[in-house]
Length: 168
Image (cartoon, rainbow, N blue to C red):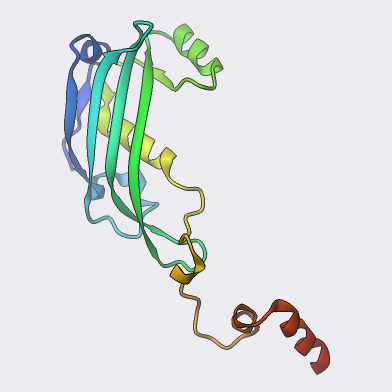
């Protein structure tokens, strides 16, 4: 298993630290459920800073290429990840609940043992498309059968219906 990256979130921000590296897809167990192939890796950059109102903030950037399954044809799609997010760090539960009321703010609890790899995995999963598909249907490869569905793909649907009506 890949080493965990655990930080004290508020100390990380106070010190203005940043973490940068690559994580193999194979080590992101929850993300693997969405992938057709777990080869490759993601590049990440996490920076601690204060926002314009002096609130602690983690800025994250995650980049890479992953393989998803097209929901039309079930073939592989190469999906380019370019995740950029900023997470406010809440110092206590009251502050977190106030942040949660604002739909334009993403916030997490400022743990003194924050697992950065789990946070990266969460953000990547949240950024995935709900129903990944090839951008154009030319990228999809329908089955080569000769059923009615395949005929409907090649002909206008009403032509297929007319032929069914005539056969009964």
